[in-house]
Image (cartoon, rainbow, N blue to C red; front, side, top):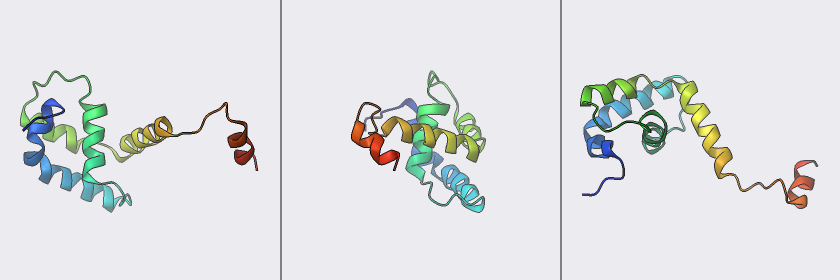
Length: 98
C-alpha cells in the first residue's frame, strides 16, 4: 500500500482517536466535520513540517489537542483558496454588489 503522507500508515490505528475527537466536535455543535476533513487538517496543518519521526502516542496527543476554533479557521482558509471568485471579472463584481 502506498501512502501520501508519512503518518497515513497509522490512520487505521488512529481511527478510534479521530472518532473520539469528532464526537467532541459534535457535542460542541459542529456536526458537519467528518473524519476525512479532520485527517486533512492534521496532514496539511498540524503535521505539515514533521519529519515523520513521531511515535504513535505523540500522534494521539496531536489529535486530541485539536481545537474546534483552529479547525474552523483552517477550513475557512481552505474554502477561500478553493473559491473560483476572481477580482478581475466585472460580472462577478456586479453579482456581489447587488
